[in-house]
Amino acid sequence: MKFYKKYLPLLELNHSKFSVIALTGGRGSMKTGHALRGILVCSMLEKKKTCFFRETRDTLANSIKAELDGIIDEDFERRGYTYTNESVKHVNGSYMFFKGLKEVNKAAIENLKGIATTTDFFVVDEAQAVSKAVWDVLIPTLRKAGCVLIVIYNRVDNNLPVEEVLFLDYENMKAPTNTYFIEVNYPEILHLGLLSHQFVERAELLRVNKPDEYDQYYLNKPNAQHIAKVVKYYDKNKVVQNINYCIDEDLHITCDFNVDPMSWAIAHKDEKNVYFIDEIVIEGTDVKSTVKEFLNRYPGHIGKIIINGDASGDNRDAGSDQTKFVQLRNALYEHGYTDVEIKIRHGNPRIINRIDAFNSRMLTNAGETCIFISPKCKWLLYNCQNLAYKPGTSIIDTPSQTVLKNDSESKFLGHIYDAASYLIEMYWPINAEYLKKHLEEVQTIWEKYS
Image (cartoon, rainbow, N blue to C red):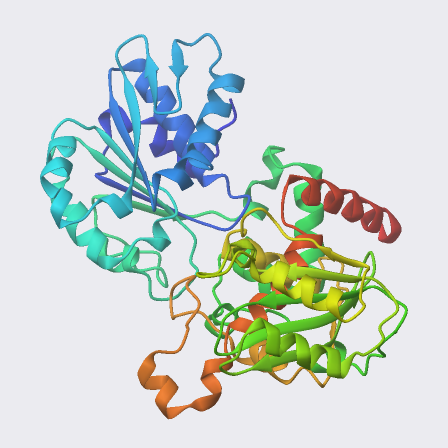
């Protein structure tokens, strides 16, 4: 088992000189993998109890728990470990379990105290997402003699609660005497041969084509202005194009059914690109009135009409036996459009998946722009330029009632972007199939330029 020298204190947890081990670094630094291997080694040597924290238990199951199970299967086979969906056990009595930090609040503090008095190792993964309020509850409970807190985080911001509460001085890489604080980025461990050829290829492509994203994700360097924008790499000169409407081509209507404003984006697409030719954004309206506006703009369309959008629009309205999608389709039928298809997901993807999908087409890892927007799409362009995250979070900053009163344009933030991103995610999802295809594309591009 190869183990990078900077991570060696993780192999000495049973008799650690440190009460806190703080690990930061970009993708490919293998900080989580080293932490897990260290805990598995130490728990095999002595009976230990470990609690893994993340924002929620669900994210644990999909990330650190899956990685832990994989390491046990590959590196610790026949070493006495067994695991279930809920826990990991060793024949010597060592035990590992998982909790979501959203469950840790003042109401649950007594339960947390009980855990803390019997637990040896605490691991907080994705620690950059943990709020100061949660840290203020968690830290005082860690009182067992010899217990070690391991925090693993990416520097998505220059002002992180984890650094504040643990007194981590990143600029000077200093910390209290009882804390082991290091940064590792992937170039530092390339010589170990632990990173796949595909990983290195993708990092190099981002370095060339998306230097801001490369610095952020791979070199652990936040850029606050870049991170705050929901739509990354929007380039007016590349994205805004005069796009022709084609009467005999497939026409997509992708919908967000918010009443005020109702927001539909109109688009053509091919296998690679999407062309937003128009938008229909109307305040205080309904499906019937919005269909009327569509028909006024696009009478006599010959090609197929494909309806995409918010999956919640497939639920029946109160007092109606029809969903909004069915209302839209039937209204088109009534006006002579017979070649109409509804193509939506059974349920909406996670917001972050839609955002990632949209950004992956706004600028691909090969440096190509695949989203083009007509100047007629006033509010979609407005969203591309202005939609942002709340500072230091991954939550989209939607306007409050006070902001809405003082800024009438702010009500148009979000909804038309949602409509457009539903279409993008539908056809270019960020999933295993997409990643496989992406790696094949990366390999082709790498071979072309190498």
